[in-house]
Structure formats: C-alpha cells, structure tokens
Length: 247
Image 1 (cartoon, rainbow, N blue to C red):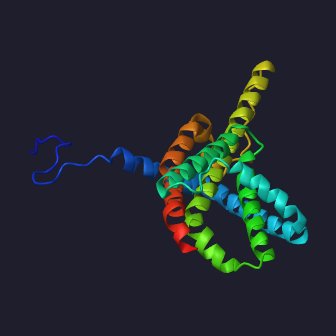
Image 2 (image 1 turned 90 degrees about the vertical axis):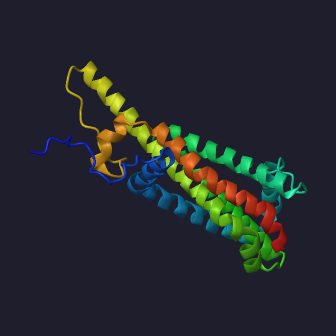
Image 3 (image 1 turned 180 degrees about the vertical axis):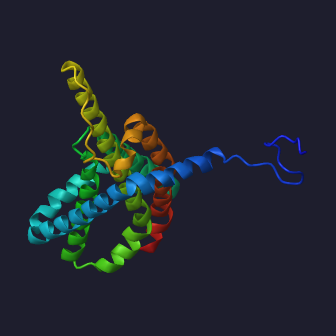
C-alpha cells in the first residue's frame, strides 16, 4: 500500500513554479481586457475617428479658424522644450502625456457621465486640424503623416485609447456602485428587500456581482502602470530621437 503524501511530487519532477508577480498582473490585465476593456476601447477608437473627421471638415470649411485653434494647441504645449536635447524632449513628452492620461482616467471616477470619451475626441480634432493646415499650406500630407505622426502615434494613440477604455470602465463601475448604494438605501428606508441591480452598464452581466464587490481603482492603477505608461514611454522616445530625423 502506497503511504506517500498525496501532495508530494514524484521523484525527478521539478517543483511547481508559482507565477511571478509581474506575470500574474499581466494575466489579470489580459483578462480585464477581454472581459471589460475591449468594448470601451472600440468606443474610444470611434470617438477618435469622429473627432478627426469633425476637426478636418470644420477647419477645411472655415480655414480662418485654424490660426486660433493652432495657437490654443501651442499654448497647451508650451512646457515642452522642442529645442532641447532628444533625452530631455523625450522625458518631457512622456511626463506631459502621462499627466494627460491620468486626468482622462481619473475623469472616470464621475459615475454615468463617461467623461474620458472627451480625450480621444479632442485628440482626433487636433489631428484633423493639423492635416487641414498641411493641406491649406500645400504640404505633402501623406508624407507628413507617415514621418511625423505615425511612428510615435501608433504607440501614443494606442495608449490614449487604452486609457480612455479604462476610464470608461471606471465610470461604468462607479455608476453601478452608486446605483447599488442608492437602491440599498431606498430599500432600507422602505423596509423592503433591495431591488436587483440592472445590468445596463455591465459589459458582461454574469460579472455584475463580482464587479460590485471588486476594486475598480486597483484595476485602473494596474492598467496605467502595465500598459499605458510603457506605451507612452516608447512613443516619447520615438518622438524625441527618431521623428526629428525623418523630416
């Protein structure tokens, strides 16, 4: 009769490896993307495209407004030292974009309003403005897009869309929590059992209970550190070191 401990691994078999912290966090992030963020990412991408089309059409029809809009954009970027060394420029761009992403994601703390969607709308509008200006100045628009926007924009815009998706998820989660708290308070006041929480804000209805008891803030911080910051860092160094040489 075999009296070995059932938990004891057979001789010669390597011990089981516990997933490292980083690997576990990225697994959680991948699960969150599949179950929560992907839907909101699509909304953010549509907002970016809509902002671009609206900006391009508006400034193409009313070119007199281009100067005022461009001055506003330049004023918002005045803290970026364009003549500095590539390293300083990259780090400043990274800080500037990371700060903007924090603001966009934090806006999701307001329930129901889905304020983070404004970020891709504005970014798309700025892109439409730049393309309209290049067209009116008879500059080679396709070449400018391929050399001055696309190399770093692939990473930067992906980070913008991901941050927006996470912010939208946070806004939906906060909306669920606010509604659940209101229903609970009303039920306690009426001495009646609480009504079920509707799933109109839930991407996957079967996860409603887990979402209500979980910590959306933890998910937001994890997503920002593991996905948004690395993408912005790559984009900043491409824009600081590579983009200027493509002119």
